[in-house]
Amino acid sequence: MAAPPSVPTCLTLPKRRDLMRLRSIPQLVFCTALLVAGSVSAFSAEVPLHQQIDSLISAGKPEFEAQAAPLADDATFLRRVRLDLTGTIPTVEEVQAFLADTTPEKRTLLVDRLLASPEHGRRMQYVFDTMLMERRRDKHVPAAEWRNYLRKSFLENKPWDTLVQEMLTVDGTDEKTRPAAKFLLDRELKAEVVTRDLGRLFLGRDLECAQCHNHPNVDDYLQRHYHGLNAFLSRSYLFKDPKTKKMTIGEKAEGLVTFTSVFTNEEGKTAPRMLDLPEIPDPEKKKVLYKVKPAKNVRSVPVYSRRLQLADAMTNSDNIAFQQNIVNRLWAMMMGRGFVEPLDMWHADNPPSHPKVLALLTKAFQEHDSDMRFLLRELALSKTYQRSSHVSVDAEYPEKVNFGVGLLKPLSPEQLAWAMMQATGVTDKTLASVKAKQAKVDAKKGTKQADDPQWQEEKLHDALKGNVTSFVTTFGTVGAQSSRFDASANQALFLLNGPLVQSWLKPSGTNLTARLKKLKTAPEIAEALYLAVFSRLPEQTEIEQVAAYLKASQDQPDMGLPQLVWAALSSDEFRFNH
Image (cartoon, rainbow, N blue to C red):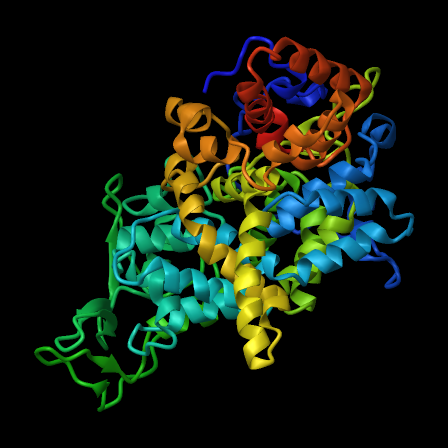
């Protein structure tokens, strides 16, 4: 379905100054750096963490508040935090209720409610599945089992260090814990893949170029760093169980890691280690080396396992890089960019933009036992997070790295799918259907499962996951994730005339187009459209543009409203979290 020339421009390009470059938002490229822990200003214990963040962001910058963007209005904040914490846009009823609410602490109450919701567990499942597995194809552990493990972990608010401990210690032999083994099993324990990803995803350092020699461009990345990580897993191997045919992890009791620089021919060796932390030596050899000795079709299990030292060494409080990395990634998730960018290139020539803020958050994160929900709450409550994405006309536009303005974040494929289904009414229709069916069962059994929010979220997800998969297939990219946005021809065609999206635009039941069709006046149509799609009320000029479009499309009554909704869904304002 092609958009008619008269589609109002307000639906294709938002008016905000920072949305003018939405076609391709460049990702700032830096080298990476070790954080030199800056001293954190002494704050009273009574000062909330989110206020400490704001104080440090503006510290030493007299003109910061004058040049920074003001706080976003309620509608913008609601949409932003809903997308960031639950992965979709608010309902029309949520928008209307939030705008009408005069409670001073309503933003705090909203954040707490979203963090406690079943949708938050699903959102974090999507984020960490993409971060840790980077949309790889399944090999040994089904994605559904892995994602269910992640979702349940986030619903339980499992600490980050506990989650990583589980992923790095399981061997795949126990069906109950096997899903956590996907991180290692689906990389098939290949040294060049696992070692690099341990460095990138858990330490914020891409050590790939330090495999054969010290990094030629980054002085901080040494060959011993790469092989120190590799030494934890060099004795491990994939074992195919002859009965179940499933791959598990076996391990030998011996084996040393040596390396030679291809540049200097200098030889070296290392025991397991985390970057520049001390090596972890093997215990003195004992007569009995194995719990299960190596044999044909037997998975060997040593008495002392180097692999089992990996999780403890990774999550040890001395390994500050591990804590800093996840703080940097959660900050980037909420703010639109990390203190260090790219997220996996942290070194001395690319230091954090705000070392004191990072040090403050890392310390707080450790003191709260690696509680990610705690950290996300404090970030969401900060003025830094809540700033508008546009500034006044006479103000100097703040640099992105200063966090003086709300940064644009392209919606992930999952966010885009759920947001479109919410906007068009697919979500509400599907949820009403599954609840109605369950209500009949509840009436017979005397149960109230249809009223359980978690049951509703799970059933809704199961009913619509095929649609989400279609968006991931079209908009998702395999490999390291980036905040850069570049639309492809396939993506444009998917939105333009793909059968899935087009089916949501046809008037049916109580979907958005059907509701608009029942309204009589342009102001009513504009308000309903903007509340459903943009989570805000339209301005007068936008009402006038909608009216002009409706008048121009009177000769195409069956096409006008679907094309109007399509234009809104395809707009930059909808495609970005701003």
